Image (tube, rainbow over all chains, first blue to last red):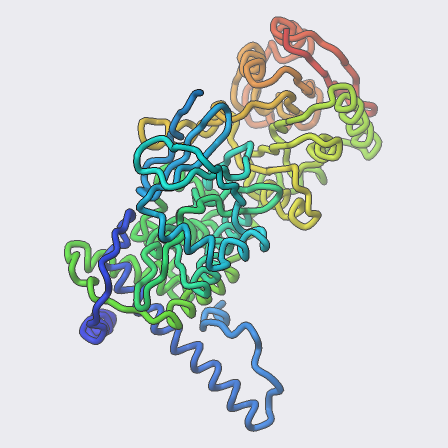
Length: 76
Length: 457
């Protein structure tokens, strides 16, 4: 499942970036994994905001927490 | 005018640190011109300084620099004692990780990003972590990934998760792996249950697998683009993941030392009075408290205005001490983990990149309270060797002698043969008087322990 996730991401993120000289090696696998992690975090935050907006719309919640954060908040 | 390039400052082409007439200066190279101007002009520098997150610096006008690449010379605020991540307790490393992420988050808001996220870019200064590398910022370009992500995970997330989920002592791996703990190793050492922790699953376990999968496919990530919103969300996710990591309260040798010591309340109070009296006589400016535990006696020196480094072998005692000084906003005490029988060596490139214990700024006074029996009995060190070691460190020595009749010493001897015929007050005084003049000798009431103030000959 994971390799398929990486493959899907890999073909969907083709775009141009300027050449920047790096003095530390960011690591190929680390960049690819980071793209996955960032996408998941982005979706999670968007979902969280929509969920709070929905609750607010329905009158079940007064306001959105100012510190909306990633799903890790609810781990452990 | 003497100029000497700092031994650990060679990796970043943006500039380097150098000493000039006792001052520590930083050359900013022409290649960093644009990023430096952006950092200073966009409001990020001021924001970070105001929040106490970054070490402030002054720009030195008219300085020609060390070589032709110089664009500017700056003088960062001086930090007297440099410590390293492998000497930090869990909370010290955790606060440093959160500092780094907070800076990355703020930098993104100002159109910049951290180009490296090494734990060595952080120092514990005035009671809390502060970011010391003002050349770590670069202008953010839409779509760019966080190049320092791997380094952040290796330097911070890996040791913190290992300390939290496997064993508190695993911070010592940072001394072996100077560029952070390899993620495949961390993944192997972490318990299986951590695969159900979202943050650790992604940033350690899957990260390690991705590294392995793409290790020889350098071009695979060339076109990857990450939106700023997602990068920001990931940074926030890392903050939450790290905040969730807690110290596992393993019982350690020292945790409840003060509760099962043979001190009566009266003798404990008297010991404090003796140490306070000696401190008052010495007027120390800079103290190393060796075997400081949670800092009961360090506080006497710090309250008297001395800069204090409080070393202890126990990571939980150091952690508790650190949390206490942070809570009480004590700025002149730095608690650190140290095994005095195997102190931090000089390591890294040419064995000079990271300073050893004795290569750092030495104190004028040492406290060695309730320590001698651990060195002499647990570690079989003769008094002469201990005296010789202390003599090289400082002029004043405040040391406690604990006789064999003391329950703490008896406890050390319960499981072993007593081969320490020389462990007595007479031999102790004889050996230490070879190198020191005794200024004060005072017995603690309700106990057989003696406190000495000795001055180096």
